[in-house]
Image 1 (cartoon, rainbow, N blue to C red):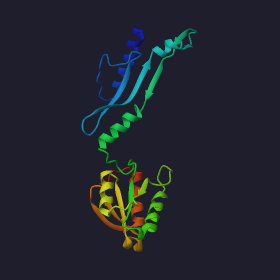
Image 2: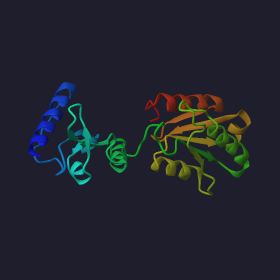
Image 3: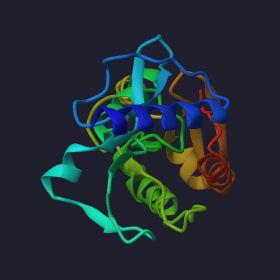
Image 4: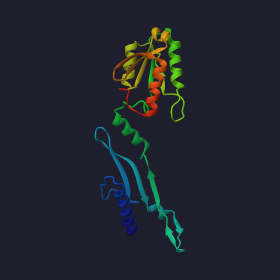
Length: 218
C-alpha cells in the first residue's frame, strides 16, 4: 500500500506542477483511502472553499477485489478515482451566496425580475408584462425568464422595498400611463430608477444580460 500511495502522490504532484497552477502540499490531509488534489478558491470576503476534488481510492480496490489482466498476462489492481468537479452542490451554492452577498447577477438570480402593478386597474397589463417575460427565449434553449408579480395590497413603495430586500435585480412598476404607452418603469435593486421604457426595449435588455452573463443590473 505504501508503494502505491507514494507512486500516486508523485503522479498527482507532477500533474499539478504541469498545470501551472499554484500547488500547496498539505501532508496528512488526504482521506485514509488515497491521496487527492483539491482545488481551493476564496470568496469575496476571504472564506476558503474546496470547489473541486479528485481522489484515488485504494480501499475500494481491496474491498471489491478489482483487477484487470495486463499485457503481461498478470493481474493488476484497478484503482477507483473519485471525481467531484463541483465539490458538493451545497458547498458550491454556499460559495455563490457568500461571494455575491445574495445579490446574484441577472443570469443567476432565482427571480430575475418582479412586476409591480400600482393598482388593480392595470392588473391585465401587468399580467401581459409577466407573460411576455415568461416567453423570452434564452440562449440555452429554455424559454422564459424567472419572474414573478406582486399583487398584494401593500403600498407600491413597500412592494419595491420588499423586492430590494430580496435582492431581485429588476423591478418593473406599471401604472395606467405605462399600460397606455406599452411601457414599464424600471428600477434596479440598488434603488436606481431607469425610468419608463418600452416593454420590448426592456425585454431585449434583460435577454442580453441573461445570455451574456454580465453583471450589469446594479
